[in-house]
Length: 488
Image (cartoon, rainbow, N blue to C red; front, side):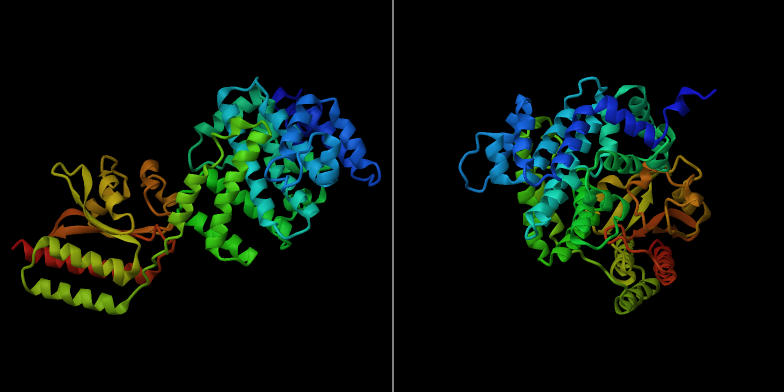
């Protein structure tokens, strides 16, 4: 006998449940509109009549039809029939689907607070992605723009629809996702609870409801190079980064440049288009009666501040043999003549920063009780932030920093997420370290270790090469000789 957990798993089960029990009104609306799309003669008139019996839907359609997004200076539209004539079938069809989707998902009052918050955030992302994709398709046929808008809006319909179901399954998945650590794959957790992935569920719903070829193609062939498929994929990523910024500050800048290149415009011009689009998204959400999304949609002022920050040129310090030689000569002089301890540190770090070519580096010294490493001198990107935040506890004997101090040996951690370092790097500390690796070396006076040298390429996201490690250790070893001389 099968358990209830296995009976309720699989894409087919969830598609049928969502279509028949959870969102029948939206499913019915989409299928009806799909039929109308095949009747060029009477579709507009029938569409107008088909929504008149629903006062709430009619009201939303008229507000949107008269919004700045759709009403380009024409007279005020007071009937759905008039909206159908002025906007055309494809536009009005998508307005109907969007209005019905928002009401079906957002008016569910039987969700737990955590699941409802998750749903709101996801719907805000989908709505923002749809607006970005539509903006990115400017200059293309209006019918195609509308198809891209609705495909972007429904790009995550499987996930949105699942969260809207509520009940034990959604609560259980929400809890597992919130309890999971950074090592666990969220997609594996989803498959374990649902018996399918959100992506597969979206594809099933898209086919079952007849949601159009553009959406199906964007899901099944996301790497296709046609403008509409590329716009959908990029808009989804951009919306995700706008609503939940990535740990890597360069990712948003890279996506902006990638999209600007695709559109064949300057990055600065596309940045402004993104800012303008977020303003339009806020206004349109209100017209759709979805004010509840406003707290989750990106604010135009925040977006402007973000893109302005991204506009700053990325400083990439390449390895420079001339600077290395200059700083090594200075250190050699310090080894022959007693020199101030701080001057030795500064010279070595300058050689590592600009000679080896790292994004940031520093010296962290042991506290009097030898339980903490505290920043003494930090150079490069985010140097001031590192002085405040880079305080590292050595309580854990397996810590990579503890090993560096106790073994008096340098380390090259190429991938902090690799299995070999799982027990050596505290998860809280890992968030401060570069995903592309870092260097450590002991700071010592004769045989006594008093701290560590640290260097990484967190800002630019570049990986290190063996020659970089050799150059780094050359500087730290020569600096340690100088430290011995400085205290004699």
